[in-house]
Length: 376
Ligand SMILES: [Ca+2]
Ligand SMILES: [Ca+2]
Image 1 (cartoon, rainbow, N blue to C red):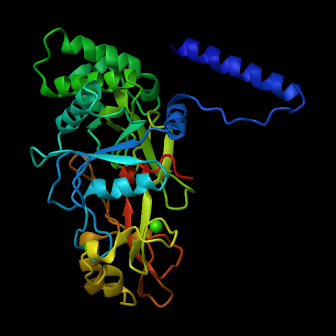
Image 2: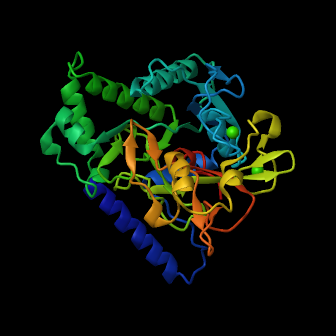
Image 3: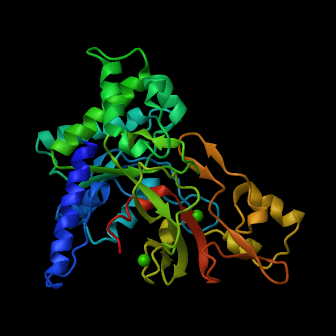
């Protein structure tokens, strides 16, 4: 596999040199390989995105609606919409049609089997011609495992490291097939891994890519196993795309990075999350309480203000930032609302660090980088 890739790269290099020698007659086409190539072809496809997630704003096109909310849009610490509602909105900024498949929560913990069930139902819908194949399924959930946990389940001799994991996908999949055997394993995680692998393989054969998160664990040694078994992971960049977001898992499995920071700003009629001055979430969809920004802006930095803020929110001043932790499979902390300290020592809500006073909230995560793949 490695040799074959090397040959292709060498060949492309030779072609590029030949074109350069030909006197720059040809404009240089960006050359995509690996996951970037998959993303490029998804974005050039006329087929829609399918967002596989939880939805509460509207009944999704397929699957279930939930009554739970997960994301605060207007920054008052009261949740307004579901995770999928936000993902679908971001996906739509690309101009592509977006369809929604609503998952159903079986347990409090978000188990990878929920995603597997969703993928398997989508495969059935496509096979039965109840759904046209989408260009890609976007699923912003991480089945996060430490490399050590993967070794326990599939073998220590895999010797996964942040530097080699990107090249070891085929090896890990062969081992998974061995451990699963003909009738399945005694280990439920191995069986879930195998279900993911099978579903992702079937979808690939149908021409459907699955795009997922790198994960928000601030780690080089934790991986979203969906990416290990065939999905394309997306890591997060900060709001201006200038650097990798600290919470984004970073190892050689992830090669595609997009913006993971979305700032809520007030505009006439609601909240704009992509800074085009157009409403994305109308006022009547939101809780409309007093925003955390409004509650704390101008307050002195002292124990009375830091305590309530740091309970929920991080502070952009490095010295005030709380230690990062892993919360279950997915949710990253410190959370999303960030203040800076002005010259007078007062708190100013400024998560993007651009001193824009209209910021109400910052939602961050590799979750939001996934639907951003085709946005400029
Ligand atoms: Ca709210
Ligand atoms: Ca907008």
